Amino acid sequence: MLQKLSIRNYALIDSVDLELDKGLNIITGETGAGKSIMLGALSLILGQRAETKYFFNQDKKCVIEGQFNLSGTALKAFFEEYDVDFLPDSILRREISIDGKSRAFINDTPVTLAVMKQIGEKLIDIHSQHATSEVNDPGFQLSVVDTLSNHAPLLSEYRQKFKDYKNGLQHLINLQTSADEARSKQDYEQFLFNELENAHLQPGEQAELELELEALNNAESIKRGLVNGHTLLDGEETAVIPILKEVISQIQSVEKFNPLYTAVNERLRSALIEIRDIAQETESLEENIVFNPARIDAINLRLDLIYTLQQKHRVNTIDELIAIQTELSNNLYTLLNSDEEIEKLIRVINSLKTELEKIADTLSKNRSKAIDTAQKQVGEILVRVGMPNAKIKIEQSVVENLNKDGKDMISLLFSANAGQAPAPVGKVASGGELSRLMLAIKSVISKHTSLPTLIFDEIDTGISGETALRVGDVIGELEQNMQVICITHLPQIAAKGEAHYFVYKKEDAERTTTGIRRLNTQERIFAIAEMLSGKNPGESALKNAQDLLDLQH
Image (cartoon, rainbow, N blue to C red; front, side, top):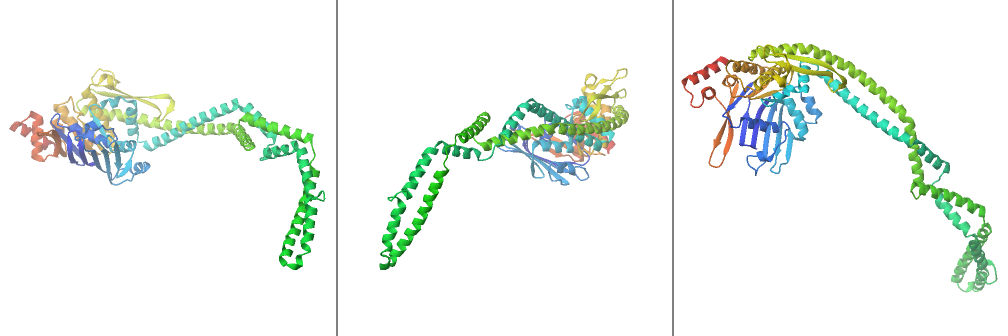
């Protein structure tokens, strides 16, 4: 239930704190005093969008806060679903800054507006004279029957399976589309893969071949350079090695005069050994140089293949070609296995559909049983609220394809007068009749729902006298199952409340503001007397007001 509503800087309200009773709360006031402003503010913490033009003071932010006692409700799992802490006394708060930016909080946890709306719908149901068109909505009509069917867990299971079923169908479409696209280019991709696979490409191969080709193409000049190098090292008397031998011999003759000469000669001997080795290797390298036209042709042929493949695939390296080969291989493998995956998914979808059809049959049977109860109970209340000749008929038909609710379509037909055949509600019911029909429906389903709070916003328009008393009785009975807040202009209904709040306007030199206060017994008598006879009620009106209160309490 809504324990407390705090409003700051909204419309004509500067600051209001409203503490509510757990039973039937009545809100009355002068026309234009701002009764519906309270609902407008409340709607902000139920997830509705806001505009800064409704601010009382454009220089301050608007803050709406509602404190709810949720003890005894089954809403903990619902809060946890949205990762919001559940507290027995939970607070929903909405802040709208002067630049229009909005922030929403539940128990001081920031939430999106969508989450606040989802949770708010589980806490409060607002029914106004302008919302009676809801009764024309097939979705609402079905929800009424579902509520009376008491199969919420089964319907929840069905909807989850239906969601899985729809997701499976979409996944199947995606797989089939991908498979069709793959098949359309399968032959070409297979050709490309075979071409690359037959090339037997090896990492680093291109660089090695290019280096070898360059050497073969320059074999003559390489051989000449190596021959000349060997000749200069060891080919004649003036070559490096004979001269180095002579140097060693000359220094050896003076080694005895200084140990440093010996050290220098050792270094020369080491150099001689290294140069002899180089000369031999140079000679060996030169002997291995062979001009090989066949090898050159073979390398050119191989490189031409590599260059052609690179140009074809618009890459520059063998590594990139190998990556493309791997990708083509994966594509072909996926295609080969896609049929199996598609068949497996089809089996899962068919199994889900079988389960859905079975559950839908059960839901349909439950609804069929609930329809008789709904027609009877709603009809009884319509008689009580002054519509003795009213008839309600609920038609159930089966749709061709399963949907999120099963396979049923519910149509609510209504007749307010004797001899009038039931027809769609919107075509035959007046505003007052719609209000009473909606009240009857809400009264019936209230016994089957865990909704903590129900608000009626002047749904008593178009009724008076004895009918108003009867409507008041029905509204009063609702408090046995939930908290009820009723904004009314009828004294017969106002007298039913456990608590009575009066909305008033205050005017000063600068502007008009709206306030609200809870009335004591004497104030209630006076307020109801004013509703009976207007301003400055006489003794008769005051006595009538007292009688109304005594009758109800």
